[in-house]
Image: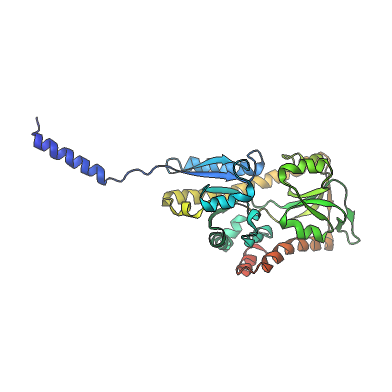
Length: 331
């Protein structure tokens, strides 16, 4: 059977019309991401596991392109790079922008994990604060359940009630520790993470504040022979995005990112409980001694630590202080 030329023309026109109104398949969105830590550090590896999961589940819809760590954008400048849209996503400590967003201290002084904070409304409060004060979308608070310790090169002096006296000692610090270390008599010294090994080697500092995680990765355990227990504070590691980039994503892309982020809060928590247990065993077997503060002195030590974070947040005048303390602090 043959077709009249006019019929061929009508059929072709109809086909072109259908193609014109048929929805085009959206291109895969690529998000550029950086981390505050070198990729070799365990915490950065946690983020990379999140990236792999997003890229697996988001194939054809959304993809994260890891650009690198501090060598790409200096950590203190990464949040501003997100705000300006230079990068789309960042992972690292919220305390790098504590001056702009004092509410990060709610994470520092937190006694609940990320899953509990999502359930009790704390995470939602933080999302609003991030948008209002940092111009960023808070996607996840990951790697929770990791607490901090004081590590020393020499055995510390003890107080009459069983506490510790750090008078005369220089500790590598950062703003979140400073008031606590001052209260213990120590002198806080600011040293970038890549330079801490040399500072310990040369006696520039007599100890550090740091989680149990990463001590061996950084080889600091070569010099740090004493750890003070109990642990205090909690990690403030989060994933943020440029707010306009987030708003421009499809509902499908947002759903994938939210799902994987929520799942990673739990899986990263579980992962680090294992890492902490294994690292604790390894460093003690290698000779690190634990100075365990007990009894009333232990309670006083913890209250002194946590209250420095909450006092700092309260003095900032944040209108979210009461709500955040109710959600994040249950001591």
